[in-house]
Image (tube, rainbow, N blue to C red; front, side, top):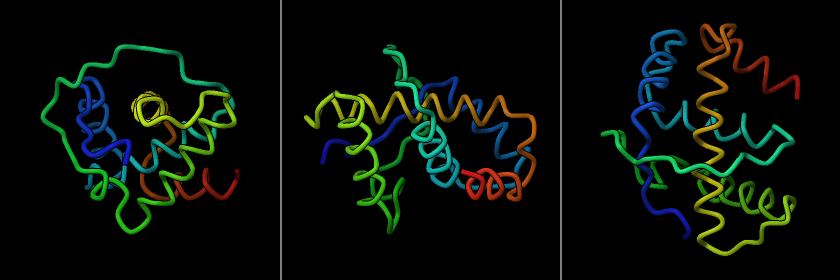
Length: 126
């Protein structure tokens, strides 16, 4: 498995804290799942970036994905192939980190996300 543990950046941690407060969604992993899907829905490839793992927010891949962990991994691998990046473990792990952090930033900057209803509306509109 390309990703065993996930440690977020301090900036992503702060963004997730704000999201938790504004949406009422309590669990990091649930917000991170939404963030990954939000970024994967964006047609552009996330720009390469060095993202520090400098926060205390850490979770295993199984906690992140829950019973749908294999589905999230398949979606990520499919996106890597579609972007012409290949499916090597290092590539998938890097793309996961980039998509996750980009998705967190997208969600944190979306002022319309107040509660679960806007999340569901976004998902069903796609």
